[in-house]
Length: 263
Image 1: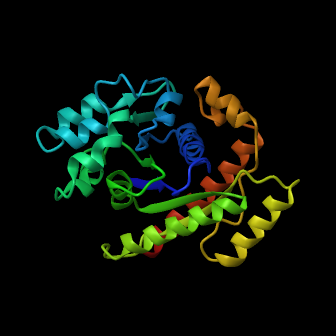
Image 2: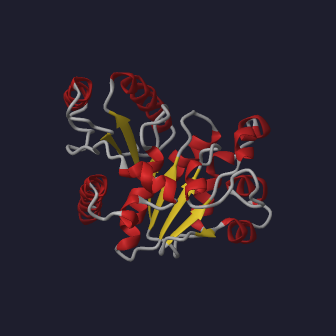
């Protein structure tokens, strides 16, 4: 099982779009794929046709009941989506209260890691859509993943969010036996604007070894796909956004294969 967390401490940079699009591309290759919506806003949960305000079982359930009856809690929470080969652990609005509820309870930073251990023989790939704030949910995601993907909108204000995320990663790495690999993904690139081209150049100059050399372009069809409740590759396999994410996925899988061969 390969686990990718998609995170940035700034909203609106394309985290949910990245998760849904990569998951759809993996699913189209016949790979059983699990997506986790760790954001209390529940955008991905909503996109897949579920209501974060009314679900009886969600990731919130796992934090409440995983120690009591893990298999039952996971089975009740896991949802089959309308997309073949994609399953969802959905969000609930109540997840926003977890930091206050859990306080400093020990072991609560590993709830998602323990959950995925129970599912390791069922899914080849897991993608985690993280909330934009540092707290127990993001800590769980980073503790559970093998690779961190950081979407960064190609505009100047997004650079500050990237700095915050990299600072958080430095703190997380202090508690890991090995540093967490990470990859910066330029998103919403519009070559017609100076701000977009300058920001992309700055990202490549400042983070030459940590950035994917491609970029995800602005594509209004992402909005159409979201409205239709379906990932873009299922709506339009030839959309420029689909093709860009297909390049990213190929780069990730090639790197993963190279890492395995050197292990």
